Image (cartoon, rainbow, N blue to C red; front, side, top):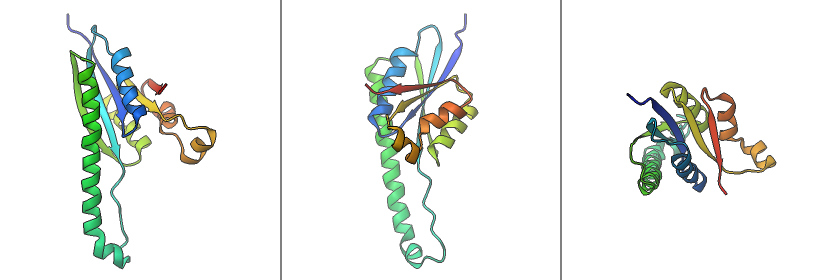
Length: 158
């Protein structure tokens, strides 16, 4: 009998909260009775854009953009290495793991990716911002909980 494939998207970033959400997901959502496909999604900020009327931007833009691109790529590599260490440590066994990198506004990219990938579940960490910080900064997890087209599990770091 063929086991049903279950796609679980885990949004990862530099935070401890997202790494805790990943380990929680593997420990609590992954089961042996299904063919689990874990999709690690990292969203990097959009590329900087400068105005053609900005002389300093024009002169230094190539160097600045190259430095920022290098830094972003190193950050993506670092986050994915940390995530890989977590799922290897937890002896995931029969899990297919795929790494996906998006670019743009995190809340929009995550919701769009979940829709395109036809995910069964989205797992995210919560930074635990209070009312005022969330009101000013917004909350990616709140937005995804309201707009994602699949169940969303928001894992709070203890």
